[in-house]
Structures are given as structure tokens and as C-alpha cells.
Length: 227
Picture 1 (spheres, helix red, strand yellow):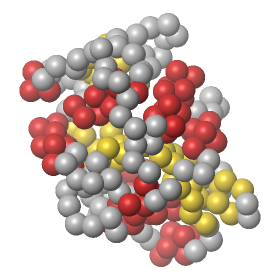
Picture 2 (tube, helix red, strand yellow):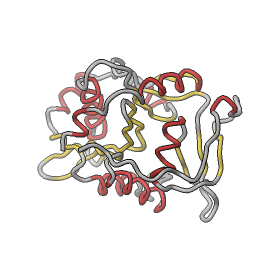
Picture 3 (cartoon, one colour):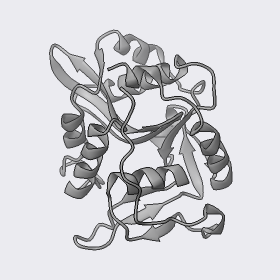
């Protein structure tokens, strides 16, 4: 089913051309209503809590953006073998995936109750998606993010079994690639050594925004809208 467009946001994020060229943080405040979140992603922004309860939300548009080229995912032989050990499902346990990603015991956890609730609302409207790795009827790992046209903005991933989150990532990339040629974009916000080992690269803010503009004109991936 196609996603439901929510009421437009009361907030504006301005022209990205005017953002500070040396600072990833480009906005403070606003809300997490579905229309606000979608407007932000369409402008190249994403939210993160400040880390202090009660403080306004922070909005980022990284100077160096992490993206995963769909032809650049590095799949080792062992990971390819692991892919045969899990069943992949899409959007069958979004809340459980979000809860696992928000586990406060995880190092550097950042997903608070407001973020969790906001992305559950996006999921209910058809914009938020989870890709899940299951084994023996148990959720072993997965990821969630936001899909708008040809953009998939990855938010977080987790695993309870070795390689389970990577298997979900492999499935996401294969699903995006099989959705047909076009200017699709898999955004991971910032690169890390772990993500770089999987093939994530950094591009400039300007390059990202150009690619985003093209991606937003693409159709939504079929494997995310099949239900």
C-alpha cells in the first residue's frame, strides 16, 4: 500500500544552501510530527535528541554524509553463508526492532521514547520500515529506517545473533537494487569504521543533496510496498 501523506509541518528548515558549511548541526527545536519528519528528510535533515531530557530536538545535515552505494556493499564469504541461515521479513515486527535498537543498555544509545513514538507513527502511515532477520521463529536482528521515493534513510540496526543485522542489511540492499534502475540512495547518516568495512563511503553535503533531489523523484521500492 502507498504511504499516507500527513498534514504539512508548521515548521520550516530553510534553504540547505545557507547551512553552516563546517557544522553538522543545522537546527534546534521543532517537533517530531510525521509531517515535520518527512519535510526534514526531504531537505536532507534528520533528528537526534540533545542528550539532555527536556531540551529541544537537534537536527543534523552532516558536512560529510555516510551513504552505502548499492553496488558497493562488501559481502564476505562468511556473511554470504550466514544469509542462508536466516529468514528475512519486512515490516512484521517494526515495534520490536525499534525497541531493540532503543535498548538503553546498548553503548552510545540515543533513541529515546519520543524518537521511538515518532517513528512508530511514520511506520503506521507507511513511511517507516523494518527489515528483519528471523531464525526459528525468533527475531535475531534487523534495522529500521524511512523510505521516501528512492531514498532509504537508515536509522538504526541491532543483532541478537552473529551477523543477523548484516544479513538484514544485505536484504535491504538487494531489495533496493531489484526495485529497478534509477537514482536510489541508501543514507546511513555518518560513516563509522564498522560501516566503512561494509562499503559505506562519505560524500559532501552538496553531493548528498543533489543525489537526494534525484532520489526523491523515484518510485518507492516494490519490496517495501508489497503489503
